[in-house]
Length: 365
Picture 1 (cartoon, rainbow, N blue to C red):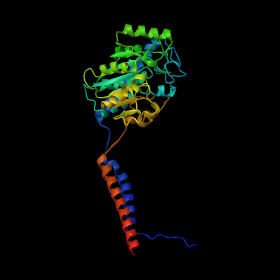
Picture 2 (cartoon, one colour; picture 1 turned 45 degrees about the vertical axis):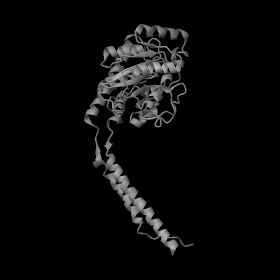
Picture 3 (cartoon, rainbow, N blue to C red; picture 1 turned 45 degrees about the horizontal axis):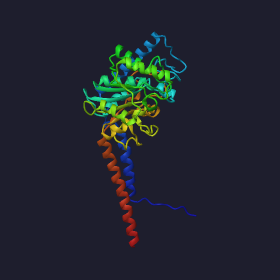
């Protein structure tokens, strides 16, 4: 059987032109790019170094108090990894994610995300912290400090496995040490127990009472409201007391953030600007701020978040501040890319049009 052969048609040149346009455009892309802004780079590096100082202060304080660092779980000896289980442990946790969160460059990532939200010096931001990720909390507050933002912080003490779940050393202790020994401001507008119903229903009773006493002694306003709607209302009244914040930053996955039926597994980490971008319906604080058209920075699902941002997942040893991909991103001209794609699309459209024209001509014959 003779092989079928297709002769070259004039319109095939349009396909070649489209391919050549994209290829040559790709080769020239570097001429339409710009390196990271030097001032932003400096801010990101300052935030990462400040976060590193905060975590170092916590480690030193733990050692001074005789609290050992479990080198089998905290392999980088950061002092930021808690217990596998205690009477205040609220949920399961992934050890590799907790170790990843100790990378100080998460502060640099937060700087980027806050800038994308349009946060400017002096702006207020709403922050919800879970005891599950104390290192991330330090990174967020470090970024806020470097950017001269005014965080309104509400924290919950309950923590998942490997978080700040040592009853003898909770987020209250971490916040005090960081506040006293670094430039990071850790003041809180309120604190709750966290856990089931946000009132520690899943904690050991004696631990729950111990934490209540600690909170009352701290002088920080205590949110102790099991009714979900009223709990959220209390929090929102604090966040919105002086106007709408520039963004809402959520660290961890406590009840108040995602709602009683929040689907954290489907919720996209990073910057979320609308309910559609969230990829799932969510109640709680995240849903409330999205309805107010306030952008949300959601810091959870550390594997997805770190890999997307160019940060290593569960690195050993822990890299130094400024070493991750978040510091080496290149910004390409959107106008150039759009023009390139428009030319290629026009050539492909012309190819299709000529093909239809030829088919119509043949059908008439």
